[in-house]
Image (tube, rainbow, N blue to C red):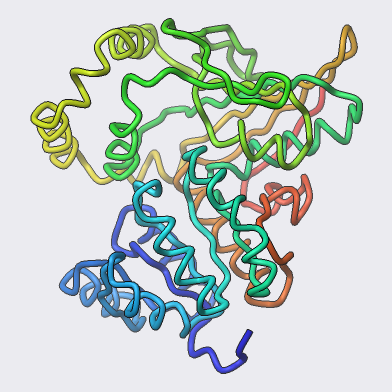
Length: 354
């Protein structure tokens, strides 16, 4: 990789809710960043606020995108839905030998970027999706449980936000899979759980909460990190949310119909950009993990910050490592590269073993 890069990072999608948080953390740590995204107006405003350079580039402009990322050692890609944007950004990074980081939780994106492992090795760069709440805490917990029980054949992961909320970007991404059946990994392959929500009660330590099985990124990443062939992931869910998922599974085709989908997206765009400042500062996330083989099992739990706060902190922690030369070429997951204790580098994060 060329040493004449003008910036440590390009933050693409910098004026989105999470991109802005990452920009704030970079500024506080003295990291040089070039802010980018589609909107010149929003970028200029954000760049002026944080005294960072900015440049508007469309994700569809391959030439301009490649030129943009070639000016930094690494990209933190924050503009989802990543199923629609990761391919273009990864291509630009491969062509310019620029490290690729993103904050996706979309399992299809993890699988796609894993398929580029050989190309990334040839380019001398690392492709690491999921450097935020998706999937650092769960990936690290999976690796920790694997270390505790190396012979494990089954892995269950779960998380709960207290209180919780989602950004507009996350909600927009969710509409892409609304009504699709959740997936789990069984004997190494991805399989559907069927047309009904799969639920269970999870003991998160502070609370026992009803939780629903979801197609979280760990069905790809935890398998890559641990090699455990049977993996399922749950999210704490109210009865109302479970009922909504049940309804969507039955009528998902309706919600994917163009006019209905556009109406839903319009309503999402009218929502607040993300959690309130109070929730961002005081909220927390509980993460549970269990690994087992036969009748032998181990459990561990994490208590950490609000998911958006954790995403900003972890994305910059990992980016700092990369720009200082601490990386593995090719595709990697956070825990596979930096170990199970990586998440403990984030503020107000603690792990407990049972």
